[in-house]
Length: 185
Image (cartoon, rainbow, N blue to C red; front, top):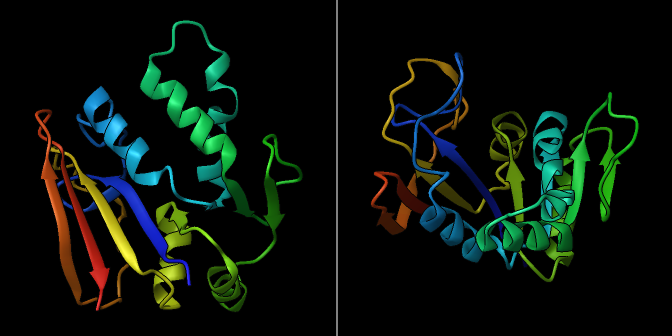
């Protein structure tokens, strides 16, 4: 059975989306980006909400922009190779290959997808991830923690959910960003 991974950049105070903009520095560092590339290259499917998909679809054409560094070109190739499922009631069409729209998030359908998948899956975006977490579908949490406290926004973890996790990996980068991987018990 494939694992479902939830991963995002998060502020030091636990926000995956700041109320007033950026989450701080660190993620744009080539060392961090290369690490993320290597970590997520094996993923076979990304599960997105509409807003996250509209952000990530950049990678469909990023390779065509001039003077892209190798780590950006590699991430674009990896993203293009993966399947994408976009959960949206409003999105009428997609603008990337290997992408389909689902109108509702169905936990049983995601369980089947995990059971049938040959590679791990990722759920991206705090709103969609909250649904997967509440349904008990997330197997691992990968946090990329910046050095900033932003004071508000959308939290990485949803309110009202208790999780007891095991820390299985951690790494600090020269940029100050910290990676922490947790597994559900």
